[in-house]
Length: 445
Image (cartoon, rainbow, N blue to C red; front, side, top):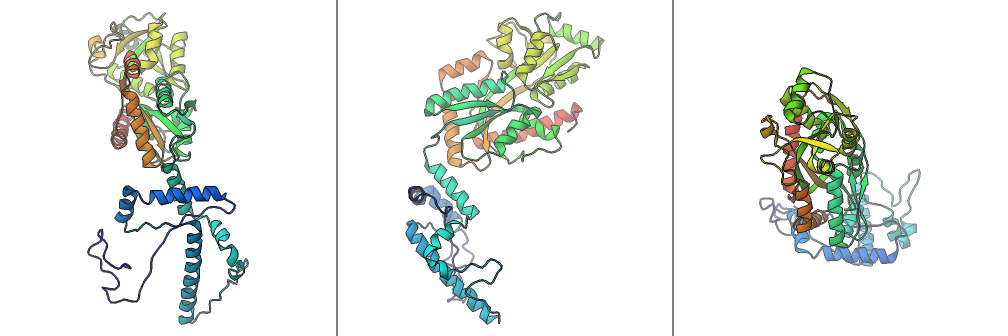
């Protein structure tokens, strides 16, 4: 190893001097460069941000763990350093060529030769055009991490149509984050393809903390629903935290003849194929929750997909579909408004906000248990400092009594998992729902 002493992380690896090569010396260095024409004040600010970052104990420790030593300097010092390195390495390369019997000229004889000697006075400008991908990416992450995120509006993408519980959860959180950070957090609905359109948009967005995703139980079902997804399901997003967990409610239209779950099950069992159910789309949580109901109740009912749970609820209200199994926040406003009738709800006990609605166990379907969850995620590569700050802001929001009361009225339990716990939870849910989909004979598209 080319160092004056052994590294703490590799104590068994000797230095080159210890190995008998005292004259051998080499180091690898990394610098951050920007395109030619970058304003001087931007370069100066970035230089200062990097210098500050390199003094942070966490950064020093991280570099040390990789065997690296932080090095900073002014743009002018870096330019002189690169120029000196260019001359040194150029000489070494030419000497190596001569020793091997190969002639290596000082300038390249290529179809588009670069005459470095003629451009010595503009060396730094040329170097700025190198656009080292790793350097630019590191500069972007450092600059982002050093600014007071958020310093501009943040978009929260909901991959479904407005009106469903995912949309509700996103808007509740957006309001609290706006209040807490004094920056606008706004919701943008990008519905379609069981949530994959909006999710893919976020997965491919810049990892700067300004585009986020509200995902839900459906996210864990997607790998079993689609043979191929346009993003890496396991690693394409960074889980931030859970927003809420809710029970699901079975509802029928207010004009429906069914007053109890037992009546609906009895009719459906005697009249296979005559009833239908709505969902937020193929493979959505509303779809799979109903598929589980079919399996537990030994029913044959027809699936009518929509672009979101909100639209499916309108289908029940208007009489286009006979029933819907959906998260409680989607159902409760319509139940309270007399637009739909609730027949049963999952969970061990009745909701305080729906005291007259029995649990599935009370209604006679003891094996039916489903819980929906909703969470927040960011694109892969989002700086950990931003993810941690966002999770901290979310936990702060969940501590607010007014938000907790609003969630309680909708039958929702506030979230707050750590990013690591949420990642493990999604992995577990993906396995569980994959098994459910196989049992329900839902085939990948």
